[in-house]
Image (tube, rainbow, N blue to C red; front, side, top):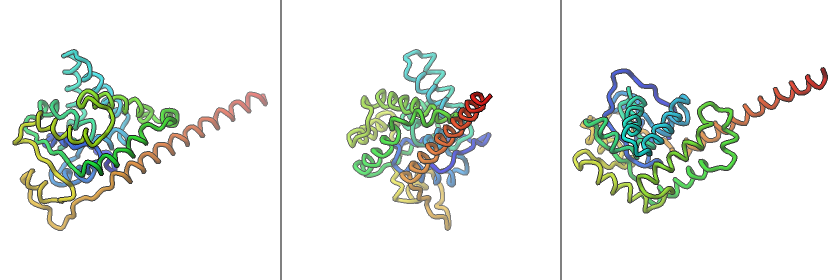
Length: 259
């Protein structure tokens, strides 16, 4: 997960489709792309949880339309997807990675870069994310928040997307390998690059035809810490709003009783 939501810049064209699974260094990858391509990057996890409410609501709608077998709904999903990504130089993280075939149709000149890591380490890391997303009290706590009140609904949509693409709804080492093979099937070989953020600038710059930035270290962002911070931030906001709302109700009730 990235650190702050990005703002689109008019005239910027999408040049990279980040097809790596969440928790494969997508935050560091996004920051690096932003520097190399000189523009905003749409990191799905960040935009949907920290961006305007329209972000998370739009992707729920896009996934639902895409799941529908109707050609008209599928076309509407593509149109909405293009609107969301207008003004960005790259898209990374979910749900974009699972929309790679659709994004290739929308952006025929873009290349696909899949961030990779040790599958077992990825599986362990994903357990943390899945656990946070399925906390039973989350729906109630997030209800007062305009965008995040849709978070559990969004997770259900992502789960349905995974079932459609992979035939399963829970992370596993097997699914990690399945994702890699799926990309090899749906992306032309000459447009598919695999990249481990541990390797730093050199392979990424080579794939993009860019010079290695002078005196700029490769971004090293901690996805785990970022997810923890975002989760704590929203839970805290939700609880504060619940407390404020209950306090107002208490004051009104007390006044009514006194009157």
